[in-house]
Each structure stands twice: as structure tokens, then as C-alpha cells.
Image 1 (cartoon, rainbow, N blue to C red):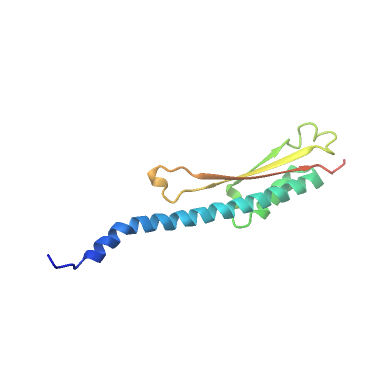
Image 2 (cartoon, rainbow, N blue to C red):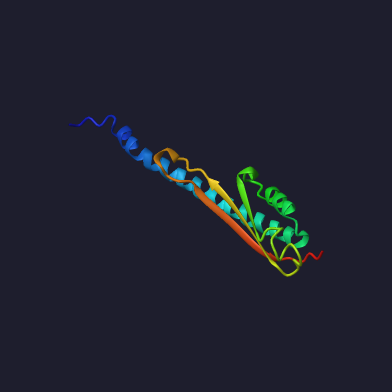
Length: 131
């Protein structure tokens, strides 16, 4: 058996799925890293806005505006405590305001049953606003 034609094609066909998985993993890790940085920045800016204005609508607007590479409609914003809960409703100065942002990254191989990655960013600031 001295005929080796087709050997390189067979070897490439065996290695190709591993190469594709490696490329998908690198892209996914990069996407998670970018999402994490954008969410941390967005949460910090939103918490700063809340500390200066004590207005949840402005906090949500700031969060949507600062998560630039991400889709703002897919970012969920949680504000604790909300504007209508004490102590923010009466004398908010000095109250700790926490803003959490969550973003779901769909998996490229979702058909296999792998879940989506949930990336979070959070920040906290003391409210400086006085009524």
C-alpha cells in the first residue's frame, strides 16, 4: 500500500471540528469580556446618575445609553431600593443605591442544549441628592 492520495483531506476532516470549536470558544470569551466591561461601566454611570438625581427613569436612561456595544433593549436594570421605597421616598441623602445590569448572551451552539450566558455588572453609590 504505497498510495497516500487523500490522506491530507481525511486528516483535515478529522481536525476541522476541533478547530471550529476553538474559534467559537475564542469569539465567545471575547464577547463575554466586552459585555462584562460594558455592563460594569453602565452600572457605574447609572448609579452615579441615581446618586445625583434620585430619579429611576434617569437611571434607566443612563444605563441604556452607556452599554454601547450591547443591545440596550436586552439589558435588564434592577435598582435597589426603588424610588418609591423608604428611605428613598422621604429623606434619601446617604442611602445606598445599588444598580444591577444583566445581559443574556445566546450560545452559538444553542441547538445542542447549552444555556445562554448571563453576564452581570453592578455598582453602588450613596445618594447625594436632597429634596
